[in-house]
Length: 292
Image (cartoon, one colour):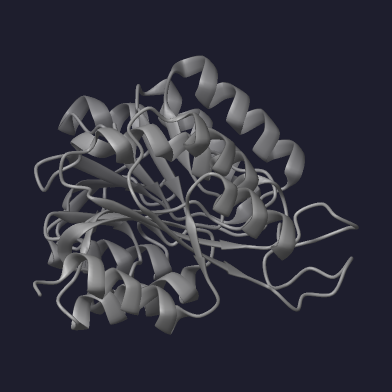
């Protein structure tokens, strides 16, 4: 469903009446996202930023026809929020909370797959179709319509990359923050087919980090792709210590598992270009996509 998102897609926000939720309802609306309602059992019947607040997703969807939910609740509340959204027929959920309990995340992933839905998160800054809409809290200054599809684990590193691309005249077709928790919904390899089929996307920017096997799994999928697009990759954590989480809970290496070296080798073997710095990645994108 991510590739079909537009400014017309109706979106609800679970946890919309909290301090963070209400602030981001306003910011998403200001960007152009079609936020149609909030969901909060404790604040049902009130309003937030001029929008009605419902007790649950079923009531919100019945009244608005919403197809997407942004989940602004605590980590311990994410599983219940996903269950509520799925019960209402929501097909895309974006959950921003970091540190969702592992057993909750495993159950949520199974429920989402069984329902044929998509879960972006946990610990994601969100996703965007620049110039159309955004879900979450990606910074506006980093968003600009353009030819590069971006997928990222690191929020701040991707913000900087997006900002530098935008200021030099390049932008993004689709931007998905997959999040940095060890157990989550959408992973890098899950996005490859979407980016390859998307006509707006001419190249792919991957912002990864040490830990886990997402980058290696993406590389394996890329190697099998029939019509691959250029991939520009940056993997954070070259100097990360073994056994110590580097920021995200999922950025953890042991032995040869999830290391910078293993990720670089697999990505390059699949045809991706792996860069040592943001500056090098930005310069390469500029050479390839800006008018000569």
